Length: 187
Image 1 (cartoon, helix red, strand yellow):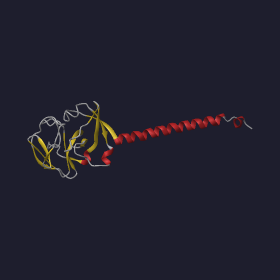
Image 2 (cartoon, rainbow, N blue to C red; image 1 turned 30 degrees about the vertical axis):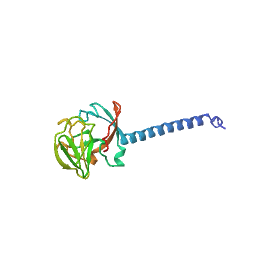
Image 3 (cartoon, one colour; image 1 turned 120 degrees about the horizontal axis):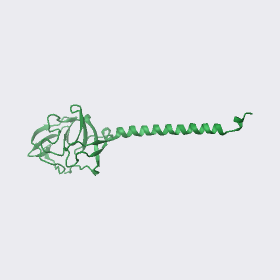
Image 4 (cartoon, rainbow, N blue to C red; image 1 turned 180 degrees about the vertical axis):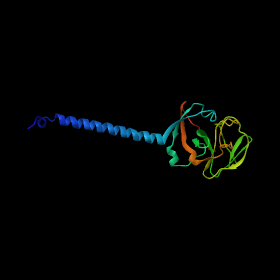
């Protein structure tokens, strides 16, 4: 009988190395799956500019929810991340109206379907805009800073309404500075 057959140590050592390696492989695979899931379901984005003042400031870092894109339709007041190929970059805006709604701005007041919006989260006074009917798969979005020229949004013919497929996520909260994003009052 050989010495290796009598000594179980080399075999136990090989089994231990194999199980340790398999543990690391499982850990790396699990970490990769978690990273892929987090990257596709959540994200971070930085606000650039003053179009969302006073709600979001230049440089604010937002936690973005991408999961909700698969389970529900956008709602009034949601702050969304829009990626429009015409622009070549993303913008952060608030949903003012959805498909089928009529939007008008008169004397600085935004009307949706003839009802004035109570927009306590805005800054500045918007220029008037003739009534517009939003297409069925489109959204009317606007920055919270309504000062003329401060925000590229659906009031500007260069952007107009945005298609729902251009929405890349919903802003859940501002992480830097840390605060919740206000929603419109329900009247």
